[in-house]
Image (tube, rainbow, N blue to C red; front, side, top):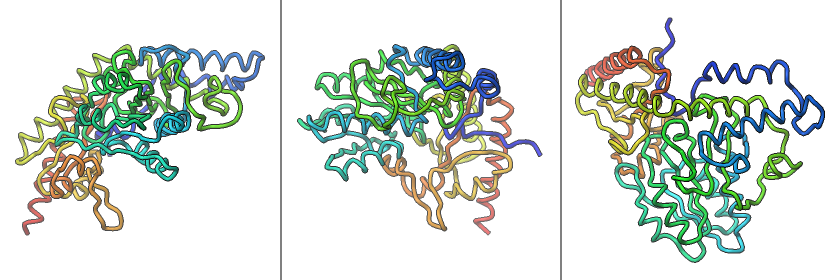
Length: 383
């Protein structure tokens, strides 16, 4: 049996061959502790610093502004909890949105148990937050604004540049979760203006379990990890050299091929969308038609049961649903709920995300498989 067409690149990505080859020596040969001063340690220490420079090629920052983490979740925790700890004396108010990843919203909920207050801003029907709403939500106690760069479910790109100007004018720290956007669209620290930026390796063809956090020079965070003095004293723990090397290489590749990859992913995404619209009636796009990631297509398909559809196509196409099903209970995505997508539409929402490796042939196969499955399910429902 052929492998299913993979259309879930926003969930995770495969390792590109160049990343595997870059990592191989640190799996097979170079094992030294980077904190050691002899040659074994110097080899791995140099590899970490080289990787740090490679990350800067993607983010457009200075090497000393990057720390390595275990992934996007830790980066978000480090940023949000770090600012909460460092600036508690100035205030206890955080501003975020209703469409953030749980790695942001759950951190805010946690801090609320320690006296912090969070404003969860609404979004419009496209999943877009209004920068003026951010400004109106600011109080004398606001110390942090955290708004994702691009949404993982519908791909909507938030106005971070505009929000950063507001934050800077009011002396408030801005964090953005760029786990989904890094490697898909430009994530330049100078253009975005954010003080803290999170990225995750496994979203840009590096391994799972590694990420990075950009911390603007001069910004001090309370420590999330306590121990020895790794990462300039900002993140304790022996470094994951193997995966840091992989992340560095992945960032270098992403930076070098960004425009080409954006074009390729947009072509496959749009071909997929056109094909489904041509074969099926009542295909509804969820998310912004233009201001979204070039690879992300979230659509409601006829029939209203995404889980039944995904079960029917799972041997041929891998994708995600817009609602979670647990013990027979269907829970609508908080993102789609915040966008006021009708529950019936949300139940039929599927996320189809293409990647660098996605081919036109795979897209065409997916169109055929999905459209035929939808028609079968509709016919069965009428019986």
